Length: 129
Length: 286
Image 1 (cartoon, helix red, strand yellow):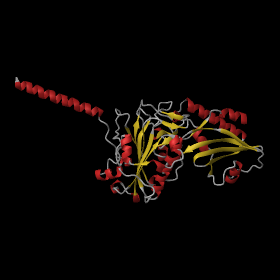
Image 2 (cartoon, rainbow over the protein chains, first blue to last red):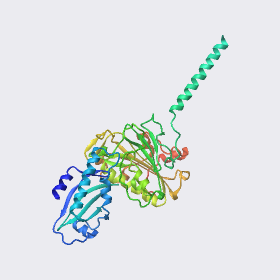
Image 3 (cartoon, each protein chain N blue to C red):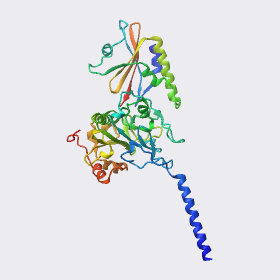
Image 4 (cartoon, rainbow over the protein chains, first blue to last red):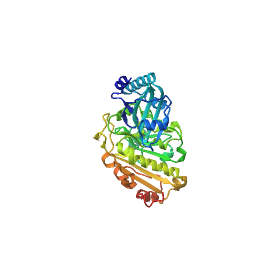
């Protein structure tokens, strides 16, 4: 899945008050299959103790980038198509997909799921003032 | 002969007057709508007048603005802020063109800002409109957005916005105008006068806030009422890591620089006092 996703991520930008690149992320040798808690997620991604973390429904991430709108031009249509493919890939290969947001103003976003002994997914940044 | 001449002259005058009257009726702008967001005044006497496309008034339930068609963004947005406008609504995050722009005007879309080095900077912030989905969503219309240096949007501008909401939480009613002027700013990809799409990058972003204690209204405003005026260069390297207090000025200074007039609806004696006020964070009761 890694190669397929990375190809789709090339030049892809996540829109917010800015437009930020989207990266593939993976963690190897992860045992167990329980959902991540805020704490285990914090350890996994090596975040500082006081980093504000929120878990949200993955729909709140995908709805921004996988829905077409009537005013969309080529650029937005292609971006939407690409994000839809990424969503399908992730849902096809991973179980227990979760969505985390870290920080304020420059908010780091993580969509992660499990496959075998890995946790994989995508990460990007949203600017929200 | 003389009578005939006078009659003809009178007839000519009447006809000319009648023609002028009907011409005026064709171009007369619509009467100014009554909006809480214009309570303090209309900084550029903007009207709903298609012949004045660079100072075109758009009034929404959530805010009022003067749109500048040539620049592709607002001259200013004016809104009232109080706890009535604050709640638990999530950010809509749905930047989109404003369908209220007159037909045939250039439709500015979020794409116009992509890879420009400038953020989509809100004039009326999303977090000032969290009382419901429709109100929050309205802040993501591109007519409320200007190309803003990232360090301005994410730091001092954001913190001044947060300060306003703190005041609202303390029971103040705020009348706020946020606007831009000038051409040319510096973002993460260097200096630009315009985005690739043609939208002008402003040189300065200002905010003028009148904070009325105890949820008062315009009628309660006196020469003692708190006024905060800040004028920020839209230049990353100047605003980086700086508090908004570094950019405090007077409404009068912004009036002169931006060509606007604040507090037009206040009694002249009060207006004169307030436009000269310079907020001192150290001495203020706030």
